Length: 90
Image 1 (cartoon, helix red, strand yellow):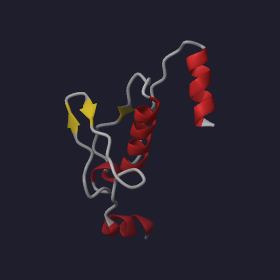
Image 2 (cartoon, one colour):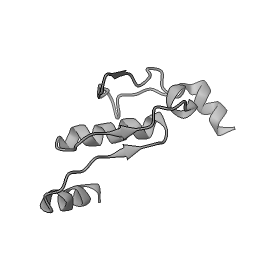
Image 3 (spheres, one colour):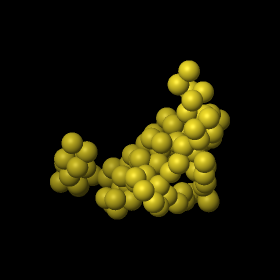
């Protein structure tokens, strides 16, 4: 589905920019989407305090100016903090 939407945008000669205002996991997923397709405009995400973004990952999302590095590794290249996941599930 995502590929079809992005292809429709490309066919219409439009730009696309994923945006996410959720958890660290969804932001990283959107970042990987942007990197995989390679022609997106930017990734827009909230920088206000958010425990689902700041506390959930063992390695936090780090911005350097306007850039965020795409994590590498298995799956999305991230590891969740078990204690935080447990707290969120209760």
